[in-house]
Length: 334
Ligand SMILES: Nc1ncnc2c1ncn2[C@@H]1O[C@H](COP(=O)(O)OP(=O)(O)OP(=O)(O)O)[C@@H](O)[C@H]1O
Ligand code: SF4
Ligand SMILES: [Mg+2]
Image (cartoon, rainbow, N blue to C red; front, top):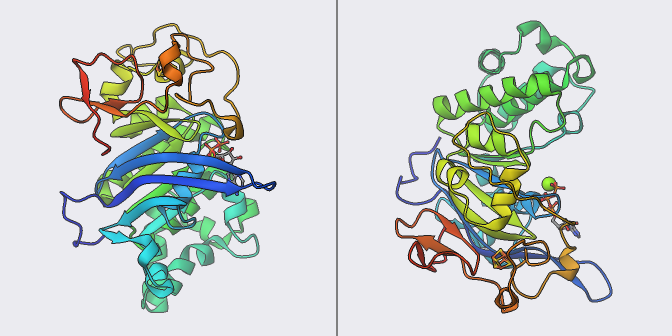
């Protein structure tokens, strides 16, 4: 963990970023549109939205696996686009990603012990004995029994493998962890254990997280803030308690309505989502949600609504119907 990051400045700042993909025939698919997102050191931010809404694209850009087409991404104040390859390689130790599929992320021919030692070999000057000690400490922290270190990935369960991936990611003491649907390929019975582990790790290590998920209940349990995406655009963001108790965007209301919550304070106005999310190649001209919105009106087609924030500057949404006495400022920050 670095001491260079001042609490006032964001660790990660995705600043008005757009990402397009060339899909042939001179067409460009806009996967992410004008997204602004900040993560403070130690903060856990949830990113939620339907399949194809741009979550993984944002996750990959956040750790410099993919450059933005427009806009800027800074990590600890440094513009990722301006970095030389060697500096970027060093910086990558401070930003790690966990994917949905732990089976695909690990070399099946290596023992778990060797897989957990790998990042220490690559990025530290520890001796063999010190690495061994560190691997044992990480295994214990991940609640993996030591006999597992002698086994191969095929001999472990999905939940155990995801713990190995998290242990490997944390071995170099990163400042930011991007988790792209880390529990969605696992049995429901092991999900709670992984989420509890992540919650403990964020408190013990202070690592910041960008937590990508379809599951609102998980986001509610783990995250400090949530950003709701629709067709590559942020449509609502704010502290999880505020957004879940008082969702103001019709899309967030519909998402919350579709899920059952254990917490009775979560507001679930009955509002069903009809139809499919449009293709990003055929996005509506104005509000991205207009083709499915139950309260659509003609002015919704007059361009992308501005992201407007509440007076405290923490809860924001992109909808023409927001009450102007509560949501006035259209500051681009998030
Ligand atoms: N390399 C690529 N080339 C072309 N289109 C891409 C590429 N990567 C992503 N896309 C498109 O960008 C859009 C956003 O994709 P992305 O994977 O970020 O969505 P997602 O929210 O992570 O979806 P899911 O929940 O299914 O993982 C999709 O329409 C997808 O098809
Ligand atoms: S801007 Fe219009 S279409 Fe979009 S969410 Fe608001 S009311 Fe619905
Ligand atoms: Mg994805």
